[in-house]
Image (cartoon, rainbow, N blue to C red; front, side, top):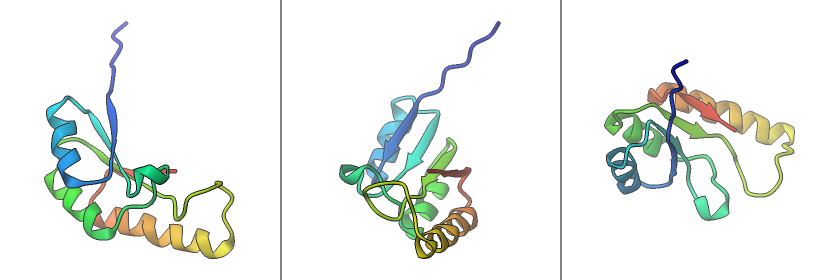
Amino acid sequence: MNVVTHLEVCIDNIESLHYAIAGGATRIELCSSLALGGLTPSYGFMQQAAKLSSVPVYAMIRPRQGDFFYNEEEIEMMRWDIEAAHQSGLSGVVF
């Protein structure tokens, strides 16, 4: 049996993207505000990460800090953020 190990690194700035890849990351979780637990990154950040990364990048979809119970307005925002991640060329999204 061949076991493949992946190293996913959560980042919230472009400098960390470069360090993560240089350090052996095989997947990037793109966030903003890691100090708050990680929130949805900006559209510009998604586009830049997709352009610069040599490994798959996944955007965190989380509109605010706190619990993970969302109202209809927040869910609608999350749908738009998922579309932005897709348009940016990212590999996918995480929640």
